[in-house]
Length: 563
Image (cartoon, rainbow, N blue to C red; front, side, top):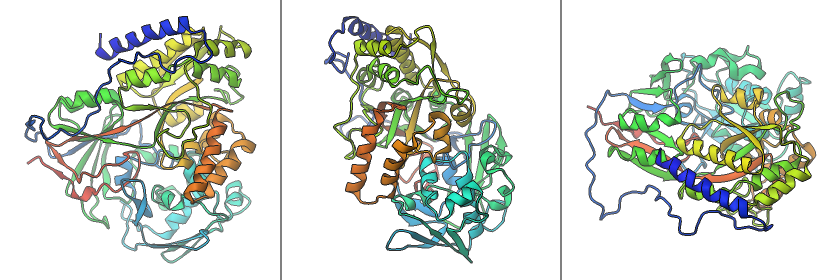
């Protein structure tokens, strides 16, 4: 039996004792004994540590990463970031590793009016798409219009773009032109109806698409287009070979306007997270973001690798499917007391300590407790099995029905977590069916919706993104959550228009108070990300940030050490 599973079973055994004995309304927040040891998070070796001999670089001179296609690649407006999309597409502005919009990219100049309502971007004139067609201001305006009508787009993007003058009329078909976006030669001017505090951040994350290749597509199905079988961008690398469900090859785009990379060829391997260890043991992975501490520790048994921990805004939670598979409402979990009961039934502190071993921090809201914006006065759901049973009875919960719990992470850590949550729920009398979600995740999560709860994660680029799915202008959020326009929209709008830190903190404080009234996302943990680098084969710039964003990794300075 695997070590992780042994640890899990000891946790489950102890949890069963606590559940059987709990009688108080305010039990201990954790069922883990105080003396329980925690594993050490990987860090750089101390000066006194024995030297580790790094093996010589081996293999072909091709940069090996994950991110290969399934049947096709994912579109770039909903799942907008990551290594592949950063290299394929460029944005008007550029981020640093702290997710700050600090530089210009496709735009060689830009200005913002004193009232924060007018943005003018002057585009470079030396940018080409990978098919040789010139990138122009028309691509930007057309892309903004398509983004407003897209059915698959990040909520921060849609929340910003809906504030463009004329956006509502354009989106609903009342207007034939998006009047708030005007172009004059290489200049794109965007007029907003009210300030958007993160508009520059958005323009450093959102990539324009090639109008000449996609303008005939239905915007509601743009993310499903055959274009994504071998997408064409304007970044440093272009796709030269694609083998669906296997791998793809990227090579330097000879007409790229920026600094030319030293690494000529990248191989994107189609792989699930559970392959990280075997790939690293075989030196078939040069660079990878990893969320499982167990996988990191296994990979580090190969002395070629080094792990770099990165603190990011990343939540793990259970997403409730409020609309049901038919879109008419999920009666099984519609009552708030049922969702409250299921959260009270999970000893989240024990799970964080035992399964994540120092990598995870308990979440009480969408905002991690270490962030200054965390509201200390929110409702907290300490482990209380007795209260969970009471709430289910008050809600007249049907104990004959089965709650479907799905997940899409494939690492052993996540499998153990799901098994334990299932166990906790079964201890309060709930029947649970747990299963791995396989296939096109966006379609399965937001269109088919064959689950009651989904174990999910969100890497937020801003406070707005943490709550974006709850706003009625989020097509994805409304498909699975249904919306509550009079409750969420005004508070999210207040946050979106603010740039002052104190006013933003006050706005997000109110949003956190609202969470307990809905529990659409049941908070579990915030966790660290690790960047795994094969330093025998790869020399990086040592700039590490959130790998799910489009930050500037200074990749032009990277080198493959294979001779």
